[in-house]
Length: 240
Ligand SMILES: [Zn+2]
Image (tube, protein in one colour):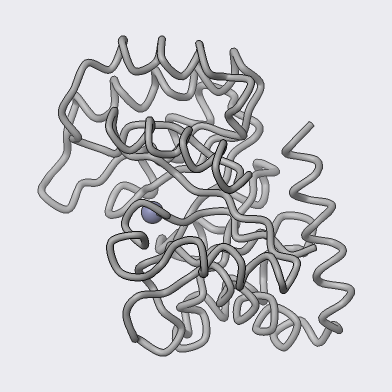
């Protein structure tokens, strides 16, 4: 089986027939993990879980408004249906934020408490996210769309965490390098649908995750079947 470990089905639904997109992925044996970003989309994810049988992560994206403690309670209550915590993290594009740090720490605690993976957004806050995760001794970490330098990538490897390779790897030298240097035991794949289309189109969809697998196979000189198997093992390890 293949896995798209991070996408946003609610945003995709605004662009195309979601049912068809889920079917296209299913035909290729692709498991979908879709992430919420706030109270409204977290509820939506639970609907998708029931309706399409997809796996879901619930969380609050940096700076999304709402009551964080209430949201955490909501996630706790639904934890049996939830695969992981996400999309959470920090985004310092508009400057550093103490509040984002506080919220991020709460979600790390939640992921540890529930013993579920955490999918981390770290744009322009790559080093800071790593430091916080290290201090919290987080283990089941997925660094999503990680754009930090290769030194930070090495630090992620040393910590035993996972990096997910987006479909943009097809045209991104950075992610091709990441795919090359990260051991296969620590790789996952994602589309970040509807964004990040391998050919810069819109929208992207889960079936395109195969592009990430193909690129990993190419960069590492491995065959696709082998890459598929190994990444499946990574996913199952996180799912335990
Ligand atoms: Zn995302």
